[in-house]
Length: 84
Image (cartoon, rainbow, N blue to C red; front, side, top):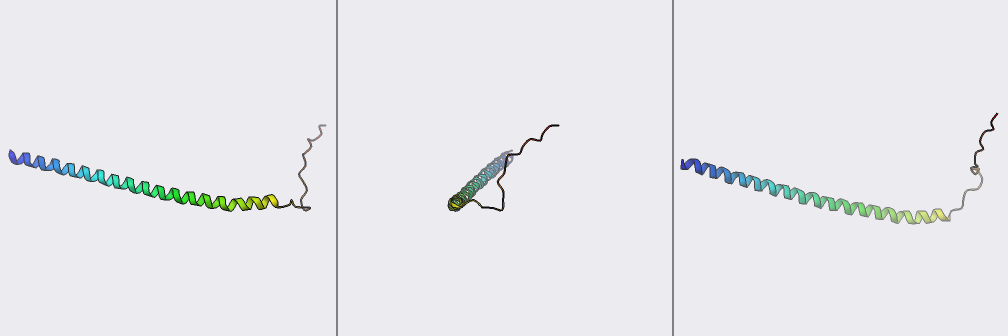
């Protein structure tokens, strides 16, 4: 009888250790996910800043350019067809 109680106690302790181990693993995975998320956010922010830096001079250059002459005619409003 006493041996059965000792087995139950040992099993309960083992289950508790397993539960705590799973919780610890889950916590470590969560921390790793958050760290990777921060890394991705930093990379994304750097990428966007680089795009903005490259876009500003390009937009300024477009504003300076003169429109093309010749080769293309300006679009004109289309006239509705005459009814018969």
